[in-house]
Amino acid sequence: MPGDSQFPLLKQRRFGPFFFTQFLGAFNDNVFKNALLILIAFQVTSLDAAGSNRLITISAGLFILPFFLFSALAGQLADKYEKSRLIRLIKMLEIVIMLCAAAGFWLQHIALLIGVLFLMGAQSTLFGPVKYGIIPQLISDEELVGGNGLVEMGTFLAILLGTATGGLLAKQAASGGELIALVVVFVACCGYAVSRWIPVSPATDPGLKINWNPFSETWRIVRFARGNRTVFLSIIGISWFWLFGATYLTQLPGYTRDVLHGDEGVVTLLLALFSLGVGAGSLLCERLSDRNVELGLVPFGSIGLTLFGIDLFFAAQPASPAELVTGMEFLRTSGNWRVIADIVLTGVFGGFYIVPLYALIQQRSEPGHLSRVVAANNIFNALFMVVAAIVATGLLSAGLSIRQLLLVTAIMNGAVAVYIFGLVPEFLMRFVVWILIHTIYRVRKDGLERIPEEGPAVLVCNHVSFVDALIIAGSIRRPVRFVMYYRIFQIPVLRFLFRTAGAIPIAGKKEDPELSEQAFDDIAGSLNDGQLVCVFPEGRLTADGSMGPFRPGVERIVRTTPVPVIPLALRGLWGSLFSRKEGARSLRNAPWRLWQTVGLAVGEPVFPAEVTATNLAKRVADLRGGAE
Image (cartoon, rainbow, N blue to C red; front, side, top):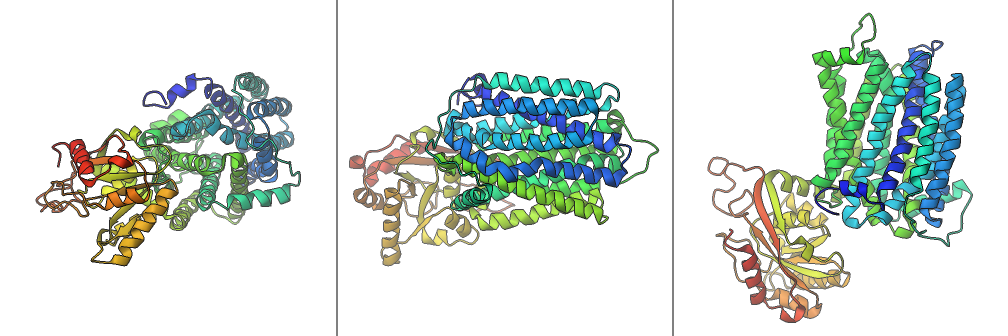
């Protein structure tokens, strides 16, 4: 990726046309959906408040129902056929559907518009697997987080503009229907025109035989997705996010009217702020993750969703003004700024949550089955959102207020997060690592490009602190297996992190000969599997800040499995919170220094024939320089 930003991708044909195609599609969806929801909430005079709330919830359920019904077919089509041509066909279908929508708005026919909502869901179902399946074909692995961040940002920016446009047009009693009809058809045509510039993306499984039975194929692709535990649980995490988001967004018009006592303009404002928040969080993922697929952002995002969701309950106290307030009146009331902050920050943390999960699915799924895995994701998304619609309708009918419903959803988010992260400790491990290198330390990295993108290698590094392995793991894009002294491996709390990261405990031959031999066997097995293995050849933490002699164990490793050895050097950690320097952990003598700058330097690879303990020690010392 050129420069330090993902934005140059928008100027390149390999990504730009695809981005703007999906942007226009999302914009059009939201012009239509928001206009319809506002029409139901504010302009259908035959319905009372409870009736309009139920109709809004049912409408949302009808929109996502096709994802559950047709995702299996959509995934097969996306894997079997060339994707750019498939996208153009889907955009042509959008034009036909929007012509039907134009007729519904022109006639102000609610039943017809709700039927069109179902057709829009079917069109979006076809587009989803192509959308996420084509991204890894258009950009490199290094660009995956940035590209997904742009797509999510574009989607929610389209939601922002679409909801604003739909709200403004719906508010016009006389000419709103005709204007909406014109806009949705025009945008659909523009989307098709842009899609013609998307580069050819070859089919990943052209020999696939289509199974037209939606039930058997749905069951088959769900079983396939479950074959990769981490990917499957990421799908569950994404699906929960859409349940959470669907509940909030579909109830927002009623929440605004009944709790905040705002008019259509306030609904549009809050939807726009939420979308802006998600877009900002999605873009920040690329910078916060340093272009890695950083799973540590997922728990961080989940915590924010729960905290700000709960605070939203307390921020808005019901009142009974004589009439609904406008957007400007809402902004002029100081007490409403807490509500605005909660809405925006819920969106930001939603971006932190969702972008890494989508990138993880794309990275760890087999390329030939990626679109079907995305289809499985869409099936679960649909299932969760249909359940959300049913449960929300039932709870509202039973007398629960919208404000209480949103509070329950936020609390449940915390419970679900604890459950999922308990099943996949890698998420929590990466969260701790991410917090470590973004709060206590600020890591300056030099020479990371010298670590190969694939294939086995041994990394050797000086040993300064108890968290050396976590700092290295958080800086290197590839997973690393660390060999560490078994007593450090057994430190409470850190033991969980080390075990989750696949660390290999080792002991001296005299201490535990069996554990020592087992460690060398595990190292050889990992290297034969093409993994990175990191060794601290000093065998112990430094007691005075200086480097100790390297032990010959690394020579034995390379003799058994000849692979390149890459020297690393940690700088600036001596005297920090997790080092052995006297007083380093004393709050009185050495206060915690948040965001302390430390360094990680990577040297040139050493060929197996040149590997000796003395040679490697010299190279690490040269990289380390005079730093402690």
